[in-house]
Amino acid sequence: MNEELKNILLKVRELYMKYGIKSITMDDVAREMGISKKTLYQYVTDKDDLVGKFIDNEIALRQEEIYKCFRIGFNAIEELFEISIFMNKLIHDQNPATEYDLKKYYPQHFQKTVKARREGIYNYILLNLKKGVKEGLYRNDMNNDVIANLYLWRSENTDFGELFTTEEFTSIKLFVELLNYHVRGIATEKGIIVLEKKIKELETSYNK
Image (cartoon, rainbow, N blue to C red; front, side, top):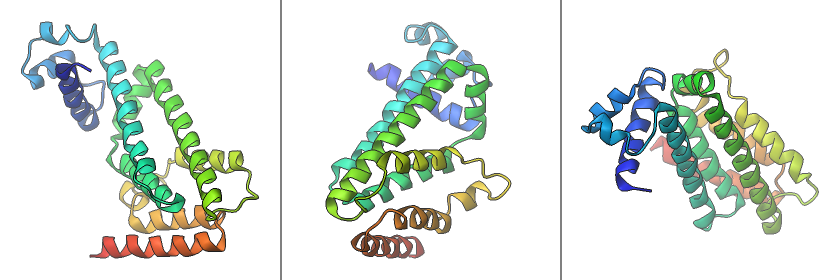
């Protein structure tokens, strides 16, 4: 990706995450970047094109972050913690107005994010389940497809406004309970030992 376009998309991300998409004009982007609209239009044809490039970049950034969880050499449970921590941060940092604007005014780009998110989460969890079974941390009598889809369903049903604030929903307390709930349902005795050790480490690090 061209370095100038990369810088534009970083600034656009900052603006969209803070103010939503609808209220940010091409003039706003050019002014914030300190460039002319003519220069901006060398990289995008219109706002719809800018939103599309922003979405493509977001998808690529998220995939890159999650891939790190698979490259570092964690066991399956440690890996699941890292993936879940990343997703938890996404929920905590997101501006509801951004997703609302995307869904209402740019439905084709919204559907692209939904498709990428669903396929990504499903495939990541499926890989994690297979790895856990191989390591003896997860049961070998699971229906991996069902478990992966259940995890996907839970991750997409985050309309928690009536039960929790965003801070409560993304708190370490609830995070630990959700992972406990998920992993204990699929773990072997060996896996539960690893789980309990990981939870203690996580709680200790957050209580320092």
